[in-house]
Image (tube, rainbow, N blue to C red; front, top):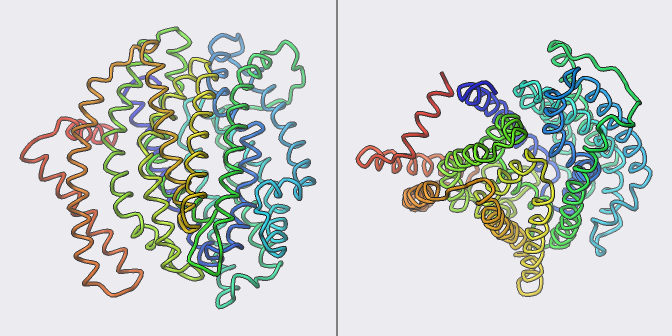
Length: 535
């Protein structure tokens, strides 16, 4: 990254791409939920569609995301050929691994899905999950190809196209989902034919394939030429694999925990009562991640190559300065967003999902899960940012240990809810455990990295207190406004949207009013930051 201006330019462009991809992703999810609802069949699709990502991340994805960019940048800087041979070897090795893994898991699908399915599920729901998995698991290969090609582009400071590529995927599934919805309109979600489920699965996988393949022309345009290389010995890949081992261990811990979460959430789902399950957990998590994806991931993706170069030069103090600036910027943005999601979670989810086979009650219950997730937005972001700082220093052990802590806390809270609360509260407990787990892990990482990175928490602490106070006051006002409006509007989906828009406008007006008469330094800095990015 050549300058701060370049960082802001790339961040803002990526943010636009991420907004569009996430918005189309939410539309895609809303279409699927409208057709399948929140019942066991929806959970069957959600589990089947989650498995490819889980297995990809578990096998090679985590290592690629955490290790590939720092190692690739090091080889681009140190190798005489600017890292070309290393890149070709890595692409060849990972491509072969992906192919073997994909074929293997498709054959092992019945055993794999049994890990995630509740024992009490009906045979029809188990069969639907297996059918979905058969056609969705080939996504593993294309997830890997997309990640590989994206990382090659990122290492060349080409960040924007990978952020826009998921839009293609979402559009394909939206079109297929609309066709599917029209086909099953008026049909009970429990009796949809296998032909319809196969249609939905095939086009879901096709979307991922196109998302990966769309990157190829841009790599060629940038001058990248791939040549398969099989001379892996003494190629530097062994160093990468050693670093990746800890990342794979981290992912393994995450996925063991996630399997437990999936079983608890799916067990909680009983279509005969007002409960929600794994689909609600996933959809709440999807919406929870929107601000993180738009703001945090865009900023960190643009910052990571610079962090890697700085860390490679052993300038840890500079790494700490960059982390502090990112923390302050993200705090200003995420505290008000998290409080709004907590206060208006039910309204948000009813607005997005209450149509077709998805009821208002189920959508509102999903909103309660979103509110539980929202409490952990800032801790999750802090943990994510500090983990990337560790990866830039080729330290994959520290995030691993704190990931264990996070998962232990979440599962402890989940067990408490299962034992001590009604079935309808279990998924909310999973969201709350997630938030508390990341809070504990983030605090631990901050304390551990404070000295090595020369982190100074004074300014960040002041920023957090000011923004928390202003945001809390604004959100309370917005909640009161929403409560007043709710009594005036009819019981319709558009009413929830109008209520949400007015509540958001009220919150923004309060913040703007406070800033006008009592200028807040952090908000002023944010406004200037946005102006610099747009220019």
